Amino acid sequence: MSIYGELPSLDLRRLVAALLTEPPSVEPPPRGYQLGVVQLLSRALAEECTTLRPGEWPECAEAFAHALRAAEESGDFPHRESVIRRLNMTALLLRAVPPSAEVDLLNPRHALDLLFHELPLPLEQARESAPRWRTLERPEMLRLRIAKNMLKPLLEFRKVSPGGLPDPRLDAWEAVFPLLP
Image 1 (tube, one colour):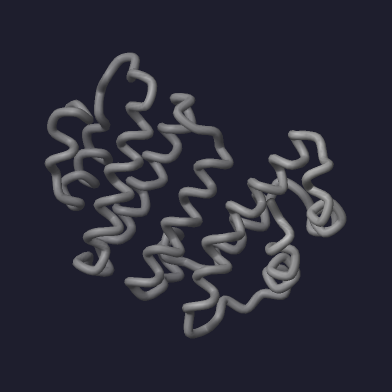
Image 2: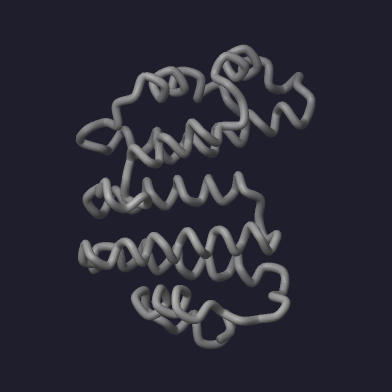
């Protein structure tokens, strides 16, 4: 199966089934191959999420996690990019479908736990560094930018969520967010 062949023509259900039962075999995969799989699956999930039945979500979430891992392992993007893509997908999906405690991809609590586990610096350091980010060394500036990219999807989701995604840790980061580069 080739990303440039059959995969792009598959609907979400067939794409998920193909990824879980017969992962695309390209030895070794060309640079960007796994990234392309992530992008295909992301687009299909975004476009077709409202057509899925609750029982179909576990496989979709598993396929998405598998695609992200494969992209990381292939070097198509680093782990933090994988985390950002996962948080963005969760926030996007939860605008269209109900949350589910059983499916990590649809679980706002899981997304919050992932965010706070993966943030590249502590709140106190961000609070101290963010106002003067232009004077920082590139690696510290980059950590602040990564933190902003990780926070953004959940803060945006929080604004449109009926429950508001209450969490005192997120409240504290929300106050620092406008200062991040």
